[in-house]
Length: 608
Image (cartoon, rainbow, N blue to C red):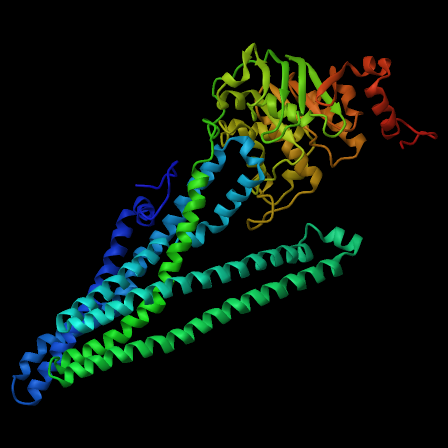
């Protein structure tokens, strides 16, 4: 069996249901161990009472010594289980904890991969996903242990009450009258402490972020250049002080509760034991059961106020987490988003936007307005325009990330929304400005572009050939393990690359993909304008006649495009080649003239 995240309401049944789905054997073993431990603790009372009474009778000559041995053996057996049961319970508990965390995290990861793309750009959904990730371990891994501890405590409490009622109904009612409010106080107190530590934890996370800014490698250059270390340091000290105050309050609350519980439990236990002593005095209670019950009552009252309260507070925290899990499981999905690219690839013939308008979910402002354009096989296209003109949004629409558009988008004459995600994945290859840097080998970083052939000998040869064409083969061949060298900072012997090297790896990965339409969404933003133009020229030579679409703010590279679409306010205001648009002397010509000095030789033959 295994756990599968479903669209349903997650509630108290899932406290046991989820562990059962993940590992039924370990779940039942742990529940059995806890239940047996609870029963054994209750059995100790009559066994101890019988042993004491028999021992007294032996001492008075009213019984044979041999009559003590069975009771002594029973006591030793109970002691053995009480000592060994906890250790035995650790075996299924540890395995179950591992399975719970692995399977629930796997299902959450799969769910996030299937989410409708528009949800990932929604801040509320993103925070929910982050919260689920943060709280998963603490609320799922120990979920059954808390439930079992609660059940074990209830078995012990119920057992003591049954024995007490059997010996003295009056004392049974007194004990019951104490139990209900004590459990209620314990729960409220435990929840209050949990909320206090939760608040302290929030302040601690904010402090950790500031500490990362102060010590992290990513911001070291700016810390030095702008000299803002003292400023952030002051903010960190203020945040740490806020955390210290909230943590001290939480600790004080917990210590006060501990001290108060000690006084309360001892006082209540003493009162009940005095009632037991009165029953003993009047001969309505034997000496053995008096001693056994007295000890059991002290343990039980302490159990109700401390361990039971902690278990219920932990279960309450899990129930609060289940509310988030229910909301997360109900998030809308797109079928097929985690499918591999289709094995049978369509040929790209044309892509046409027909009177397309689009606004992001929850917004009243249109980003794309009545857009009309056509892309055809084998041509190179560029989208240019000011920030906010809609360039990247067009890429999101043409790749099927958003379906909530007005008008129609026709891919090879067929409405884009009719294609399966696997078909669209097989149609497009892309490199974005924030391209991925996988902590894997050089070869795997490139071969990921064609996941279906990854790991084959042919894929390895192709990856090396692409590296050669992009001018990075020699650099990787000299690495300690060549193309099998792990990149990044995680694995032993891994090597981190420069920004330019990572960039060319991303391009190689894109070219590895046999998709007929290649999209480049400002992946060269970190390069200078001249290097960007040269890189695009190289890509044009090795792209194998694919149709390409690229976006760039720097217009020197757009001269390589057959057709340039100039966007303004979500619509095409100019179309044509670089030469044709320069002749029009419109918006494109103005933009190009403002950047002209980046590309053309200045006086004296040097580039500006």
